[in-house]
Amino acid sequence: MNPALAAGLQIALVVAVLAILYVPVGDYMAKVYATDTDLRSGDLRIESLLYRLCRINSRTEQTWYGYAGSLLGFSAASMVFLYFLQRIQGVLPLSNGLEGVSPAVAFNTAASFVANTNWQSYVPETTMGHITQAAGLAVQNFVSAAVGMSVAAALIRGFVRVSRGGEIGNFWVDLTRGSLRILLPFAFVIALILLSQGTIQSFQTGFASTGLDGNSVTNALAPVASQEAIKELGTNGGGILAANSAHPFENPTPITNIVEILAILLIPVSLTRTFGTMVGDRRQGLTLLAVMSTLYFGLLAVTLAAESGARGVAATAAGSMMEGKEVRFGIPGSALFAVTTTGTSTGAVNSAHDSMSPLGGGTVLLNMLLGEIAPGGVGTGLYGILVLALIAVFVGGLLVGRTPEYLGKKLGRREITLAALSVLVMPSLVLIGTGITVILSSTGGYLGNSGDPGTPGSIHGFTEVLYAFTSASNNNGSAFGGLTVTSDWFQSSLGVCMLLGRFLPIVFVLALAGSLSAQRKTPAGAGTLPSTGPMFVGLLTGTIVLVAALTFFPALALGPISEALQ
Image 1: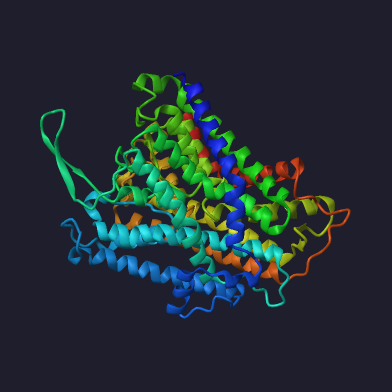
Image 2: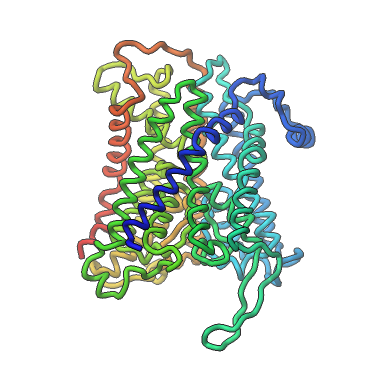
């Protein structure tokens, strides 16, 4: 089939299914995170039992610092548990004969999965046992995703509520409801679909088979379908097998490829509807969706063009545009998957991003550098684009000489400062981490591509490092495979970037939610900048692109842009 036609059919199918599910899923999540405290009486029996066991009063509202304290405490406890679970896995049942994980890898992995990054500096089949995978990593796939959605719900309440104390909800209730009412049932349905298509689900260690060369090989088995579903739905991305979604046991057919793409996009896209429903103006959600769609499809078009034919003489001489791609999915399925996972915080891959053309690889890198808000991760994409919307409104207010307002809440010095701090975290981590790494003489040997300064090899080596710190700081998890990240420097530095890139913006966003919640609503006046419609779509899109362009253009010029011009 013609690649353009194949791409068009796959995109049309994804868009059609999302359009069908957009309203019911979005409105359902709005009910789950209802702002009316009277609805807390609607706890499920299992939820009420959990609250009693954990001594939680589900009807108590928290201020932003109480909410943030609960979130940080829960995440810290999760990280400690996951670290020690990896260290002692050798004495656990179903360990597959594997020993405990080394301290450096255990720290990096614990930070990764708690931060919803799922960066993997290890080979899963030979490092993690079934208990570690199921009781540790898979559980974090659920709760880390629920944490992101909780923060988004708290920020929405900041716009909706008028509370003298600045209460923004109850973290424990939001965490429980997000896990039990949204992620668990949705993941169960997706897992059943994957099972029906051949994705494996087994607690056996593996089985032997004879390869085409006549030699006997051992094929790893694992409870893949259950973890694959939440890995994609929760925009986590960590594969239970090393080849990730390129492995035929994880992603066996073109149908499962589409299902996984839909799973990745479902919650982030539908959360715009949730936002519109909760604030009482669904045009607000559609406006955010229009911005996300503009960025997503623009980057997808560039990636498809780069990978389908515009790869240049060097790519043609190298052999094939299919290098690093699965023949089951082809270029359209690989490009669609790559843009989807880097536009969210998923990081799952069904092809080798390191084998993409300089332009294609640079595009998926830019997708992360935009802040992963097209459409972003579960929760993180929504609160990320809302923060940028506040920046855009502030810029618009300066142009008309009026105090900026958004959804009836004035944006003063405190609100804009918190929004700016949240936006600045990721660029600081990416640029500082990349800068330190490339000047350290001890890290050069870990680059899969090296050479004299200015040569294509050295340029690509720089891009690999930039991609790694971008992925970690954005909590994405994908990587350029040519970079070896097993040294103590990479394990520790990337782990720190994951934690700071995740939790610093969360603290700033929750503080912003508390500040907004404590305000009275201001009726829109004649000079109020409208936050819906084509004009605001253009303003917000331009703000997002401009912030990324001013911040990252020098780094991109040294990496993928220079490589593409070689």
